[in-house]
Amino acid sequence: MSREKLIEMTRSLVAHGEADTMELADEVVGVPASDYTDEERFELEKERIFKRMPLMVAPSCELPEPGCYKAMEIAGIPVLVTRQKDGTAQAFLNSCTHRGNPVAEGSGKATRFTCGYHGWTFKNDGDLLAVASPKDFGTVDKAQFCLTKFPTLERAGLIWATLDPRSTLDIATYLCGYDEMLEHFGFKSWHLFEQRTLPGPNWKTAYDGYLDFYHLPVLHKDTFGADFFNRANYFAWGPHQRLASPSTSAQKTGSDEIVDLTKIAEEDWPIDALTQGVWTIFPHISIASFYGGGGRGAMISQLFPGKTVGESFTTQFYVMENEPEDEAVRQGAHDQFAFLETVVADEDYTTGKRQHEALQAGMMDKVWFGRNEGGGQVFHQWVDRLIKADDAELDAIFAPQLEAAE
Image (cartoon, rainbow, N blue to C red; front, side):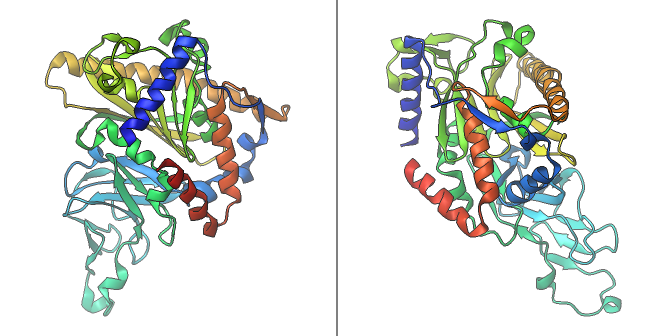
């Protein structure tokens, strides 16, 4: 069913490409400029979205083997993600259950974690293994002192976690069937080639750029080129969106060759044609396919709010279908990733920071999203909707979206 949906979307893109048209939103929409600059609004977004909604905490290939782990901080919450002995992924609160000190830093491989404060030791699955000087400390029920687990789900080669151990929102329901579409990338068996973290502007300012092809031939005229496409059709699964340019052509899988889709039977359309464009996972992920030196790859951008309203940070994962064995492919992938750093850091995020500074002057009531910027309209509508929703409403919000996708 999901492949049929990919073909259906591609058929629509080809038809619009032939007609030189695009799908348009109903109207031009204004968003309050204060949504980007208000500190109280920013704190509310962290509490109601980043601490309640499932977040993609890692691509599966970042934790390729049992024992692999990474520690991270999300909206002020210390998080530990591990690959357990049975191969499953699990996210925990990275706080010792004795005094709260983080039990892990950085990333690596370990079967156990020992708190650097008093020496309590936990297994990779979060169970408390040992209390230091147990006779002196006193008797405790170890089962009551395990690391706090966060709801975790691994699908389509990506790992999600909800940073609320009491959350009743089913992660699969939240994904609205989008994970079935993402399965077609095949990330489960991909290789993590490189990663880096970049500072950015307000998180919504940064995310707006991932939902916008309109700016490509203007802001990126010196990198992508002034004749680069600026149109996008949007496809939605609840708050998650794919944007792709209407076109009759696509890159052929495994090469730099561009093929005319109108001359190929639909069942023979290459996977790159079916998955082209940018795939966003609300509220903070962007996935875009690239070729480096002929190797099929993708950049997964993981965006989080920073400590203040004008700050964010983005970890970029460059993943590849196959680990490069040829030096030319390896160098090509490295060059591609370096090029994308220039595009995002020097163009997108530098512009976003200037934009945020201008908005902080408080002289604009609204910012605007045109009929050709439907993705941004939908994104801000979902932010508003989820900020206002009670915890008990969340399943009822997403369940119909999943049913519609099925």
